[in-house]
Length: 341
Image (cartoon, rainbow, N blue to C red; front, side, top):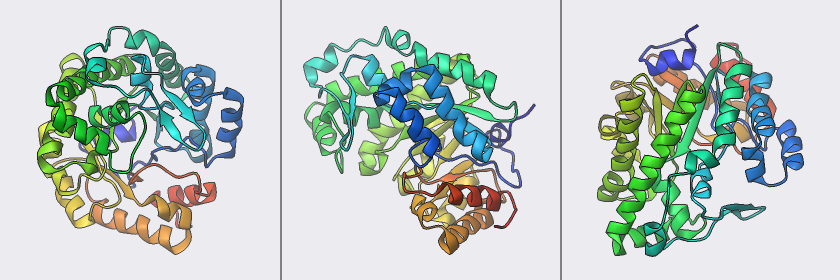
C-alpha cells in the first residue's frame, strides 16, 4: 500500500493533500494529559514504550491523520550524551551548559544504546498503526540542539550559542559535526525500526544571519542527509528550518531534503515558488487553531487554493499549542479533506 505522505514526498500532487500536525500528540488532548500524569517525568514518557506508543496513537484514533509522528523530543540526543537533560514544569528543558572542554570530551559511541527504548517505540508503532498511515521519525537539527547544549536552556534569540560560535569557531564546528553524525545514525536507526520517513527540526534557524545560516544550518543538515541517504538511498527526509524566510530559496538544493517545511511567516507567493522545486509542508498559523471560526477557515482555504495544485503536505507552521480546542482540529481535518464544516 502506498501511503499518501510518501506519495507527496516522491513528488506527487494529491487532492485533497495528506495532513498531519506538528505536536499533534500533546497537551491539547485530555487523554495525553492523563498519560503524562502517570508517566512521571517528561523523559520517562519519552523512554517508556508503553506510554510513547499510546500518546503517538491518540491523535490517529481521534482524527485519522495521514501520518503519526513518534512521540519523543529533540533533546534525547544530548541526554544520551550525558548532558543531564531535565524538564522542569514552567521552565522548559534544562541541561548542564557545555564549554570548549566539554565539547572535546563528548562521546557519541553509545547514543543508540541509550535510545533503544525510543527505537522500540518505533518498531511497535509500525505494527500498531493502520497500514495507510505514514510513520514519521525525527530529530533536532545540529544548530538547534547545540543552542540548548551551550546555554543550558532556551533563550529568546539564542544569543549564548551565537556568541560562543564567534568566540570558539573550531569547537562550535566540532560540536555541529558530531551532532550531525550522531543524529544521522539515529535517523537511520529509526528508519530501520520502521519509520517510513523522517523530519529534521531546526526550530531556531530564524535567528541566524545569512553567513551563519549556511555554516550552522545548511552545512550540518546537508551532512546528515548525505549520510542517511548513503546508507538508506530510499529514505525520505523533510527539513524544517523555522524562520529561515528567503534563505529557504536554496535550502532544499543544498541540503538535498525531499521536502521543506514552511512556518506560517512564509508568504504564500514565495511558497508557490519553493513548491516548483519540490514538495512543501505547512504552513497554517497555530494561532488560527486556537481562534477557530472564520480565522481558521480562511487560513485553511488560502493554503489549499495557493498550494493545493502542487505537492503539498498540509500542516501547521509550527507545533499545535496547548490552548487549541480539539474540536478545531476536527474541523481542520474535515475542511482540508473537502467536507466543509
